[in-house]
Image (tube, rainbow, N blue to C red; front, side):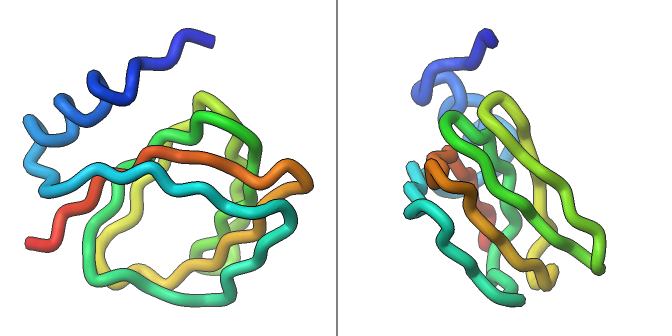
Length: 93
């Protein structure tokens, strides 16, 4: 797997209009029930795995996978036995 560096990911996100980039670390087997965010998301999973559920459709994401969420899109997250780390770009506009 050939992932960009964090700096490369951040630089590209900023060029694409995102306002901030964060490293998010999630504990093993952590569950985030249905919720939404006040920002648009573009993210890259760099370690571990989790299940992202949107509109009743679940998608298993692992290291190397990317995902996006529009602002105020309801979703839930269920992290695997190793937890997960992903880089997330946020756009509040």
